[in-house]
Image (cartoon, rainbow, N blue to C red):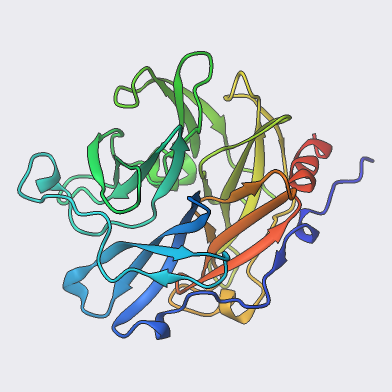
Length: 315
């Protein structure tokens, strides 16, 4: 019998965890689900924040760090949609859970936003070049699609994104793929990943794929529902470079699962949740910023090569 790689041994939690927590910011109820990228030598996180004053609902703030550990969170929301403009008058202000992808000198932001009285959420595409000015482009998915994630380069002349039809319900197909000539018009939908028993039986969702020589590495969240309620873990999937609808490997154990007190206790217990990761090819390092218990922001790091190996060795 083939021995499977234990992926739980690859990533190590940073000793400074949690890096960002609500108690650092008066009036903030939750800081969670960060989407990280590198910009001008800084680590940028698009941070989801929820406030005790509920009429503000969820906001996206920019958090910046010189060292990737100590962050300064800006005091104004980064993404503002004009609710007087069609179609954004059908979108409420709960703007969280972004996925950010850099293509050339532009950072594209996919944001799942609730669609008011309609069946949401749907995904809004926006962009920035400096994380100071945000420009909305259009709504690029039908509801429900929560967690759509853009590939960082074209494949055979087309843009691709991973979709999550059904918003993550296990009966709705989980992770699919679509392509576009211009980032706005999407089609050629293909199924990619269906439920698996080990730690993703209930639902799962993607983050922006990371290019490696051996395939597209996709960090995912995956959910089991034992007797004490849902447990959100983090895993990895490897897709073919030229045919990204083909899964060529995945981790059969999670990279990270709720274990620490700051992960098991909070506004939503037993949650570790990624919206992306940063690959440092020179250091062979994967930096995983993640939401813990829908309350705090944490960091785990490990070998990028070992994560890819764990996917391939389990084929």
